[in-house]
Image (tube, rainbow, N blue to C red; front, side):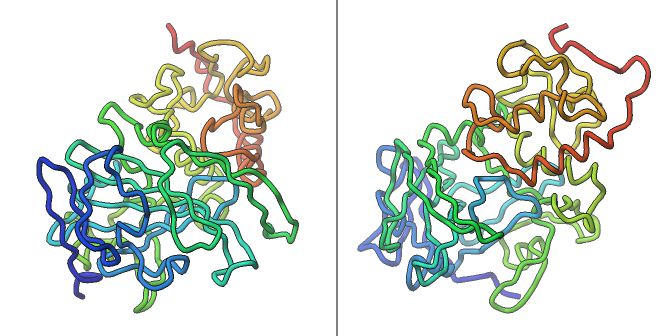
Length: 366
């Protein structure tokens, strides 16, 4: 199989990243926030009508086994790696992408008002520059013809129909450029992609030529190097599909994608003592009979992160059910309670056995 799409010119050097956008009059020099493209079209990611999100040459769509919850939005993901280069495979961590890589994620709500059946809200660009990764939020206009850079973010009114036929209204929060670091600066190494991991991408996706496993497709397209045979690659279960994993495995997958970018030994929330990454295996690291680092409103007068058999006494559930900015978790990326995710974790905690004697609690502060 040949590489997906044709090469796209990219010049990489001290000046940063130069993109050739097919719809622009010439190269767009891009080194950081101050000279970032003001319009999404400058990246040349889509062909035809922008709202259709048909990938341009060299742009590959992708999806995750278990995605981050973002107020019930639909997400459309794309990656473009510089011609002749490839990301490096890792079994556990995010892939290492070469400088010049662009990752794009569009958020949308269902809508009968547009030909695509959805209203595009925002497209977030994660661009790998010489200086590292940078996140940029682009907000779509009402005509769905262009998205404009909004470094300061903002609140968009949104009205949509959920899967049960109920009409919902809410404000959709567009993060500012600095808030991208709140999730993507997951370790001391700085801003990094979160979803581009083997266990999230190890699933089939429908392409123009038919259905194919994403890891296989990326390897055949020449944008991923070093991947093992498919049966040796890890796969995360789908959080709401019991056929893909046990209750425990699906709860852990949900916690990792939604929480572990902060709650890991090197993350912004490392001082809490929680480790919600997939590799963690100590129940106390997950919060089982673990005291909070600091008591206060965030604990809801509950004693432990997780109390086996009693989700109503668990700090984890209290914070997931809250919409108070000073209490709720995750603290970024949502303005609604994820009812289905709450149900999953309540079921998991309700079925949780008592830990071994002597492992009932540990104070992470000492």
